Length: 180
Ligand SMILES: [Fe+2]
Image 1 (tube, helix red, strand yellow):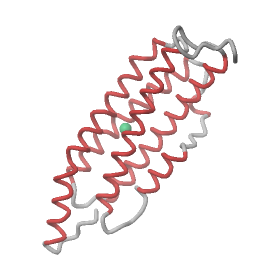
Image 2 (cartoon, rainbow, N blue to C red):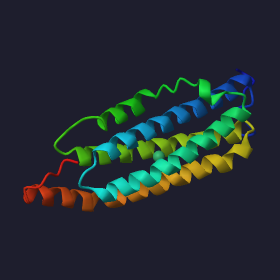
Image 3 (cartoon, rainbow, N blue to C red):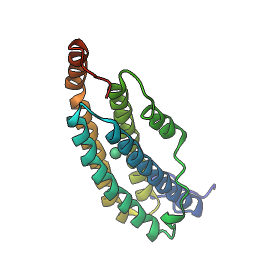
């Protein structure tokens, strides 16, 4: 490890590359989890079609992101179909939030979705740095494409927070079902 260069020119040791591959595998697991999280919410949303629309759009994007990650893994000799897709602990906890039935389910899910997108943004920023450092600069455009979609989704979700909260309260005030 002493010969590794972690700054400057790069880190191209086997260990460094293995770590980069593991990062891509984790991102793959994360996006698979994102699909499940979105599907679960789409099954349950009744009164917030604007949320469903945003989730459906990002569902389609996420399928594309998974495809990009699989292409990179394939090139690195790692077969995505053999991945166990174990999510990271934190992503698992965030996803668990999205599986909990609560009187303010739509808001809790919204918070979890924002947190999930922020987690994904950090993941891709990290992978972009690792790709450059390990000599896989050719992957950067694909990772940046994923990052841009996460950032745009994060902005969209954040932008919905005030209206969503007001609508939730208005429905409660009008005696309407507001939870989902
Ligand atoms: Fe995402």
